[in-house]
Length: 231
Image (tube, rainbow, N blue to C red; front, side):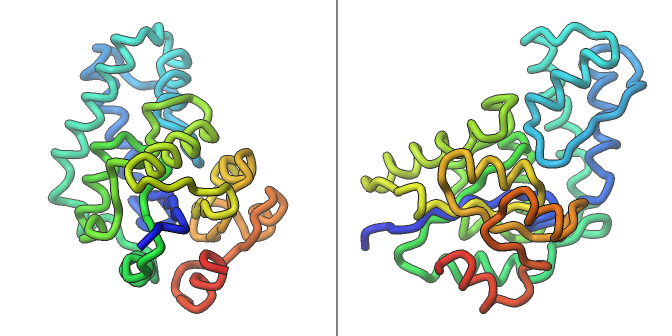
């Protein structure tokens, strides 16, 4: 069947909540990559890993050279691997996330992937901890290594999906689901549909003000989720 709709999911605070685990990884990874102690901690909020890492290095007095950025990426992946046994106890899948992914996977016209600020490897680790990988095609996602600008991730994922499935996804057939104004702006920048969930640090009012087409309290009400995403 011809694929007619592309769903691009954010991970953190949209599908899963890893609380402050990521901040702890940064402290160890920063020391492993640079030999220095982390003094200024990262700011996330829908930003890409490349943006976070670049600013983090600079703020801590380390030149953001490509080699250093790649070393920090590798150290972050290693930290997430070491912490994987703690995920089930210290993180959680958000209400309705697994059910939504499963339900949309049963829709023949839908393709599901990611647009996330995470590294590809860490994306896999986080989702695997809660058995959320089966219905997502991670090969066609947009990840935080690609650009410091979150909107750049959307056309990358769309192009990969179009090439794999042999069909063009019109902007209005692309749905970006996330929890931050940056997710909203990434969608709107390319004419895609923005569905925002107020399960992160931003209120429903802030997400509406950012321009989201639909704002949901969470993913628990699947009828509301389906209406927002499939129209």
